Image (tube, rainbow, N blue to C red; front, side, top):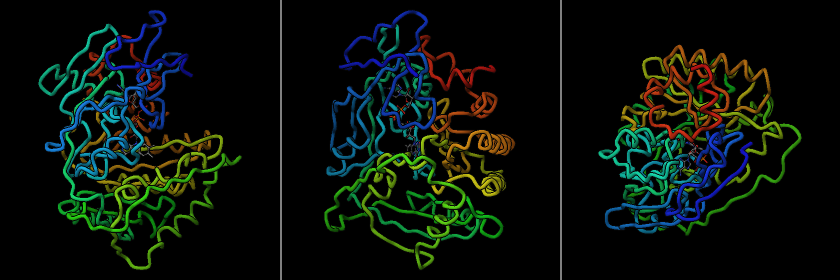
Length: 425
Ligand SMILES: Cc1cc2nc3c(=O)[nH]c(=O)nc-3n(C[C@H](O)[C@H](O)[C@H](O)COP(=O)(O)OP(=O)(O)OC[C@H]3O[C@@H](n4cnc5c(N)ncnc54)[C@H](O)[C@@H]3O)c2cc1C
């Protein structure tokens, strides 16, 4: 565990004094990354959450400047009533502006909007030697590119400027379409990518044989007019306890997935939904991770290039279904070909598969090795924000710019993830 955690009370504060010259630091956002990229064992965490002030917002242009610890949920509360929305959002709104930049997060609109970092116009980076650097795509441009998706290793972002996108209402016109195979999933993606800003799919990772690759395809657009549905009130529940064993096992997984796949009577349904349940279904159940029991869970998220996408995803799903592991939280999404601004950004043109696995020790790690082999052979990579175990060789082959990136790391910054994937370098 980290030895200590310090905070900057104000964005004008100097960089915290390091305990001694061997201690390393890592910024902390809201801790919503799944693995060790947001941990610094035996080091110091610099907590950004006290930096939670808005600095400026222009409701005419949709340009917002906020401190790095502001949550995306706080941005939404401010800007949605004024007709603006996040240009890109991950599947939880409880992440900070700084954390969203450091992982260059992506969302359901990757195929037309790319990643979060594309909408960052500038930020201030506080380095451990006390320098404050204003980084833009033109100024300190290499540090700008290294910091977007830079896993918190290049310095501490104190504030950032973000371009929002216009909306006319908080509602989403959403459709859900049941599909029976991976081939049908890819056809739906092709048919939807032009006309739907948001596309994503739930895939039944327990399906074998003719059920392999079946799922529910979700697509949607912001409603053009405020449909004046009844006022929406945000509802959250809390998963009440940690069960002694994971509630997710091969039996509950098959039963749940079959029921979920058949949840709608018709093949295709339409509804107008508030943006919260559409984008953030998991935020409605706080502490949902408790359902995996005291041993917790791992997430595995990979992306494989388009030319090998169909075969690789089919092989991955086959392996997962045969293992009886996995969980009902399984997401398949086609990523577009818009360049990411970050040196270590995760998305690439292709298809991404993300799913949780209850921690079953060695058996799970053997499955991960088989999945790694498929991802690596297809020229794909894993997402550091969701990783707690990938071998260094897979990181290095998946992120060809990692050596260039090392030039921009702050000499006093490090993370458990970085030390792990650099061990063999
Ligand atoms: C339910 C759920 C759904 C998710 N869905 C998606 C998704 O759809 N797409 C996606 O891309 N991700 C997704 N994620 C992952 C999440 O969006 C990222 O891990 C995000 O970066 C977490 O932000 P955070 O504020 O919690 O930061 P943390 O997890 O605390 O830190 C993340 C990284 O940011 C760095 N950092 C934090 N603050 C600063 C700062 N001020 N300066 C410099 N570096 C900083 C940290 O050092 C660390 O490397 C999801 C996570 C959850 C829990």
